[in-house]
Length: 325
Image 1: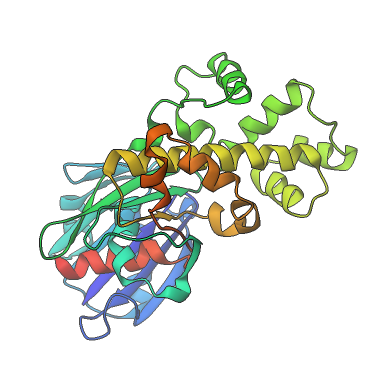
Image 2: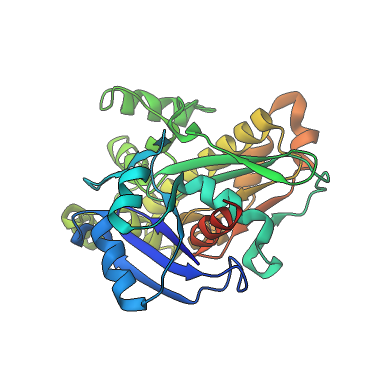
């Protein structure tokens, strides 16, 4: 029996799987508010008491880098260690993997109904596959073919230097360089980055904001949902402009990743934001930015582009990885 988890700073999803049911059919599952627990051990112990299963291995996708079996999570004080988890939970085998690595593990088991096609393209059989996922942060990973199956490859590419591609983005970079020591793609292409774009547009004379929305944004702990909602329902010109800049930057960085790993097998957009903003992704601005790579336009035109719709993809990926252990 396998315990799999998608461990995030806001919420944690846990589930029990068996080899017979496979990595897509949990026997039991639950979602927990992560911040209410002092550690992952405490959260898992509560879950295991409730489900009353005995497991002999565990696989946890973690929203943060995993180095030599240790991991921390953004926005949580938890420190996770595979050996300590094995002892505390009395589970013989425990493995931690980055959450984007977990998503990458699920790519090959997703159903067509769980994907939205932005561009059909022509996938090369056994070609490399890229995954880029803007959620709270920006995650990146990729898959390579080893001759018989796909293997996932880790990355922290979302923390690479932001490279502007037009005058507006150059101004955005200058603006953020006065506020941060390092301006990565995550600063402008994630849930944390959307308010940075909005603030730049506000400071540089873009359309005035509606008084009611201005007050809501001033009081909000997390401005991103308000900005996204106002852009989607068309009530705020500044929010629409913010999301258009975001979509263009996402397209550009997705194209960068596609070139770096030669993703002829396709590009997959994960994370919580792409499914939420599908209408904006379909307007064409994303694909224009994705393909704007000079002499390599034709190469990128042939690459399929999909949006992952299944919100439990990281959990399924962690389970898939656990069954390979």
